[in-house]
Every structure is written in C-alpha cells, then in structure tokens.
Image (cartoon, rainbow, N blue to C red; front, side):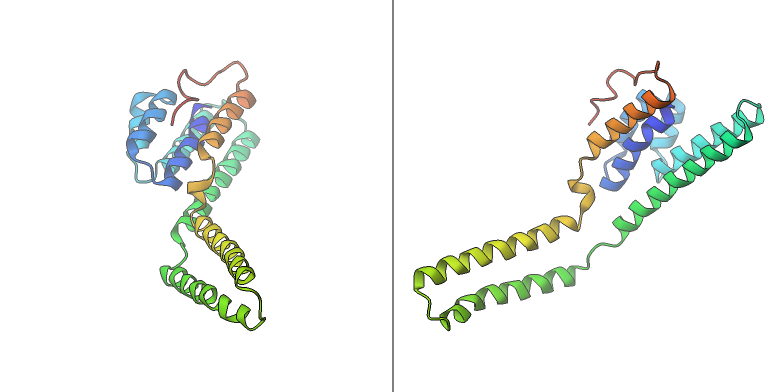
Length: 188
C-alpha cells in the first residue's frame, strides 16, 4: 500500500525534474529506509518503485499469499502505471521545436505591426484604429502566451494536490484503517 501511495509523488518529481532530495524525503516517510534510499537513487525512481512492487507481489505469490487472478490483476494495473510513466516521458521528450516558437512569434509580430495599415484603408478614426489595434493585439498575444504555457503542461498542473489525493485514495481504498504517515500529506 505504501509503495502505491508513493507512486504519485515520484511521478510528480519525475515529470517536473525535481531533485532527488525531495523524492528521498517522502520515500523515507513511506518505505523502509534502505528501500527508500535505493528507489530515490535510481535513474528513474518511479520505474524502480514499480519494479519493487512487482518483486513484492512475486514474493507474496511464491508464498501462496496471493491468488493467480489477483496476481494477474495487480500485474495488469502495474502495466497501466508503467504505460502512464511512458506517456509522460513521451510528452517530456517531444517539446515544441524552438524554431517553431520563434517563427510563430515573428509572424505574429508582423501581423500586429500591419494591423494599423489595414485599418487605415477602412478610413476609421485614429482613436478607433488605436483601440481596435490594442484589442486585437491583446487577444493575439494572449493566445500566443497560452500556447507557450501549453508546451510545458507538467509545470502548470496541480501535481502536488493530485499526488496527495492519490496517496489518500490508495490508503482509503486498500486499507481504510491505515492512514498516511504523519507529515506525508504536507510534503512539498
């Protein structure tokens, strides 16, 4: 249960590129010290955690503590978690090329500089031309800024809250009598 509670925190740290020390802090709250140290110092701690869970399930299966159906179900769910990590890794590994961003910024700037010339053909008053140009500039730069923010979705998402809720949901679902360790929910 504690391994699954740690998954959200490790995934958050992985996609945001947070330092190992932050991962180590929450891992020591949830796992035995030696295992927490091992997981935190792996190249991809979130994948090391899934490996650790698979090892625990295999050991339980070898001792006859887990039925075959339960073992297959857990393995299937771990495969989904592994696939989730892979999808996040693909998103991180395929950023928008800088030339695309530079090109769109230059085209936008050219367009915004030409708006007053185009509006002049309509024989609008100078005040109306100014306000129309300002409004169009505001809208277009806003859209461009939204595009820049979308390029890095993991920096904008509330991953801290999602990781905390995931940990609490795992505790509530698998062991209603087991609360997260003190201090784990407030970890940043």
